[in-house]
View 1 (tube, helix red, strand yellow):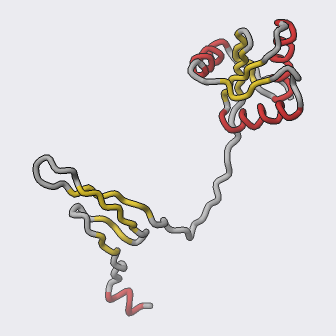
View 2 (cartoon, helix red, strand yellow):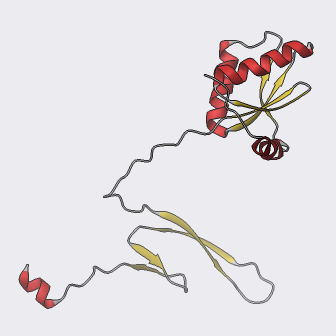
View 3 (tube, one colour):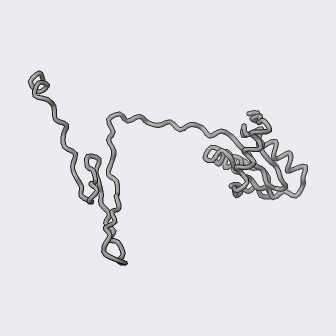
Length: 156
């Protein structure tokens, strides 16, 4: 796969985003093994923008490694400073299963009941089902079935 070309503006934005990142993958003295390459590909799929640290001392070898990584993984080379490489590849879209008949499941709700003065509030954790709601007083109310008109009932 060829490298992804970036404009200078995009490169600057990705460099700024990568500033606070820690290296996700470290390339050891064995160099670029298939396992390391697979791990870098998985990190790019998961994060999109990653830092990679190379333990090679030769500057020319690091530059060649940086370019070969970008070519083989179909990523954009963003930055190369010393032993750190910054690579970017757009994250693949995840397919979301459309469950039309699915309803919301139970959820945990934390209720704080404040006492008098400087006392600690009482914490109560309730499980609220999909057909229930929580009132402002902390009570659980069941949803009532929607009423149909008399005319609609007669026509059915």
